[in-house]
Amino acid sequence: MSTDASSGNTTDDQTQQPVRRRVSTRALLVTGLVVALLVAGIASYYASSHPDGLEHVAGETGFLDTAEDSPTADSPFADYATKGVDDERLSVGIAGVLGTLVVLVLAGGLALALRRRGPTEQDTPDERASAAERA
Amino acid sequence: MHVPDGFLDAPTSVATGVVAAAAVGVALRRARTELDDRTAPMAGLVAAFVFAAQMINFPVGAGTSGHLLGGALAAVLVGPWTGLLCVSVVLVVQALFMADGGITALGTNVVLIGVVTALAGYVVFRALQAVLPRRLGTVAPTAAVAAFVSVPAAAAVFSLLFAIGGTAPVDAGKVLTAMLGWHVLIGIGEAVVTGLVVGAVVAVRPDLVRGARPLVAARELEIRTVAA
Image 1 (cartoon, each protein chain N blue to C red):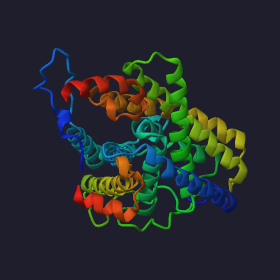
Image 2 (cartoon, rainbow over the protein chains, first blue to last red):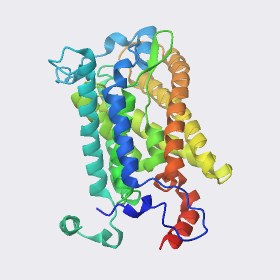
Image 3 (cartoon, chains in turn red, yellow):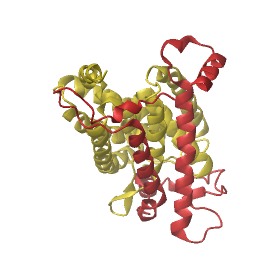
């Protein structure tokens, strides 16, 4: 993949131009992912357990009873709790980390599949796949 | 804000499902113009971050909480169409694996949390950008205002859907008033998180922020020329 490795280059600039200290794309992505995993894996335990705005309004105005259980309510990660893990901290943390990674893979994969590839934009999907292999 | 199954009747859920599918269909085409080798991994990260951030309910008083919706944040960072796709992926994973938001309500949630916040948020962002000074420093505050507006906007659209297809005989005006009141407060949290995150990325890599791109194009060219 042609992420710009040179973008982290901050030292060997020969000119007088004041170059802003830049963070490489890779460093930014890794930092962002670590933050997301910490939020989902650790901070989530400390989230408020009060009903959210919609749920509160539904209760206040009297339509909360019309809510039905989701068909996926028996999922191993329903309500962000990992089935079979008793420790609450661990239970929500595992669900959060796995959910974050699943979203990363699905959304990242979709974005990679949709992205433009410079001049080969009009290539057929097969040609694009082989181009990706060569890269 | 995740709507469970049962709040809205079947015709309304089908209608929002059709609107959601159409919007995602358009986004799948339009996102191609927003995505390249550098921004595609950003889109994955933005979706992952929105999922993580949505787990953090913050209290807004009187036993009520709210969490980031993230549509405006995603739209400013990776573009409105890609942003809509990011939030849609989050909503699908939440509905299928976390039982957060209903299954028949998935279309409703994509409309409210995806389409309304990403697209309306981006329209507000662009409109403000058009009248504000063209400086990088304005990107994060502008994104914060757009994010703030996006939350009551989504709450208003829910109230409209409830007025049309709510299954309980509840006064729609009362629902609208209550929804707007709480979601203005939740919108403040949305604005703070969005402003901080956009500000952080703009500070280190403004070239990777879609909403900052018109402002960095000239400078990027200058740096690249020197580096080559």
